[in-house]
Amino acid sequence: MPYVNIQVTRENVSAPQKAELIAGVTELLQRVLGKDPALTHVVIDEIDPDNWGVGGLPALQYRQRGAR
Image (cartoon, rainbow, N blue to C red):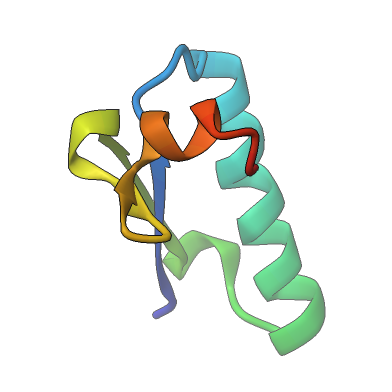
C-alpha cells in the first residue's frame, strides 16, 4: 500500500489542483511500479510559509532575495 505525502506552502493551492496532484501521483505509481490505485494513499499537507525554510531563511525572505 503506497503512501505519498506532498508538502506545499499554504499559498492558494486550489481544490482542483490538489485533485490533479492526487490523480497524477496515483497514476504514476500505477504506471511505474504497478501499484493498485485503490490501495494508494496521497496526503497533501499545507505548511504556513512562516514554517518553511530554504537556504537558511524563511521561504518568503528567500523568495524576496530573488532566489526561487
